[in-house]
Amino acid sequence: MTNPTCLAPPMKEPLTLVTPRETRAVDTPPCDVLFVLSSLAVGGSERKIARMANRLKDEGLAVNLACLNAPYTLEPTLRRDVPLAKLERRGKFSFATVLRLRQMIVRDRPATVVAVNLYQALYVACATLLLPQRPRTVALVNTSTFRGRHFRKRLYQSVLTRFDLVVHGSQAQSRFWDGAHAGSSRAPENSTVVYNGVDSAHFDPVVAFEAAKRLRASLGVKPEALLIGSVGRLAPEKNHEVLLTTLRGLRVARVDAYLVIAGSGPLREQLRRRAVELEIADRVNLIGEFEDVRPVLAAMDIFVLPSIAVESFSNAALEAMSMGRPVILSDIGGAREMIDDGVEGYVVSATELSARLPAMIAALYADSRKRQGMGAAARARAVSRFSVAGMAAVS
Image 1 (cartoon, rainbow, N blue to C red):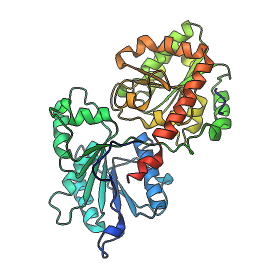
Image 2: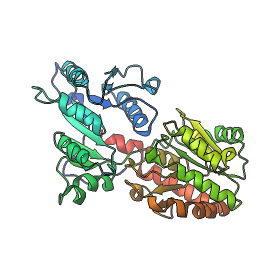
Image 3: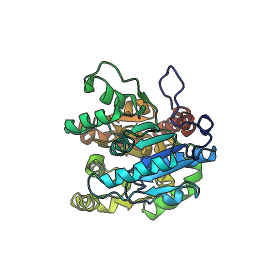
Image 4: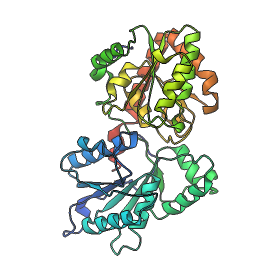
C-alpha cells in the first residue's frame, strides 16, 4: 500500500440549481429545494445527494428529500432537520405515488424540484403537470447508455423537454442525449454539464491510512502484495467478472495480487462461484457494502472501474482519485474527461479490458514509483478540478 504523503462550460447567465429563499414570496413555506430520489441505498449518486442536502442545509437553505421506495440505508447520514418523505412506490409505475408526490409539492411549494436521474424525472414531470404554481424543475441525468433500448431513450428525451434545466454529468453524456446520437446538431437551451465533485478533505488518504492497514491485514494482504479493487453494485453492467479473469492471469504470471470489491448485488454468488472455478477464491474478497468506503479505497493499490454501461462520471472513481489511487477506467461516459490517459491512470475500451488489464496492472506492480506518481497526480486532479465545493457552488 502506498504511504500517503468541477468545471461546467461557460454560460450566458450564472447556473443556479436552487432558487434562494430571498427571491420568493414572503408567505411561501420554507422549502428551497426538494430532491426526488429512487431510494437511499448505498450508492454513489445517493451518497452525493445526501452530502449535498446536508451541505445546503449548513448554508441556510431549507432542503427536503423524497424517495420513491426503500431501501433507506443512508437515512442516518442525513442531518436530523432534513425531512425525508417515503413515498412507498409499488409496481413498475405507480399513479398513487405520482399523486403523493404532487400533494407534497402543492403542500410545501418548493422553489426547485430536483429529479435524481431519469425514472425520478418521469415522476416529477407527471407530478408537476398543469400545476397552477409550478416549481422550477431540474433533472440530474446519470445514464449514458440504454444497450439497444432506443424507445426508452426517446421516451426520456420527451420527458426531459419538460424540465427547466437538465444537468448532465459529462460532455460525453451530453452528446449522447443532445448531440448527433439524438439526431440534433446542438444541445437544447435547457441542457448543461456539471461534473460530480468529491470532498477531498473527507476523502484524504492520511485520514484512512491506519484503518486501511488494518483492513489489508484482515484480508491477508501483505504490505508488499498488490491489492486491486473496485466499488460498486454487483450487477452485470459493472462487469466485475473481468477483474476475476485478470487476477487469474496475474497469478499465472506470478504477480502477488489480490482483489477486493465493496458492494452488494444479484451477482454476488455467481462471482464467488466463478472465483472458485478460476482457483483464485483465496485471493478474492467480496466484502459487501461499506457506508464509509475510505479505508477500502485507501487499502487498494490500484482502483479499477470496468463497467460496460450506466456510468456517467463515476463518484467511486473520483473518491479513489481523491484517496491518491491510480485509476483504470473503461472508456464509457466521461472517463476521458475525468483523467488524462497515462497520467492519473488509464482509460481502456470496454471490449479490450480482458486483453489489456493483466499486462497493464503487472507493469504498475513492477514499477511502484510510477504507481505512486499516478496516485499523487490523481489526487491533485481531484482536488483542483472536481471539488464538491465547485459542484455545490452552482447550487
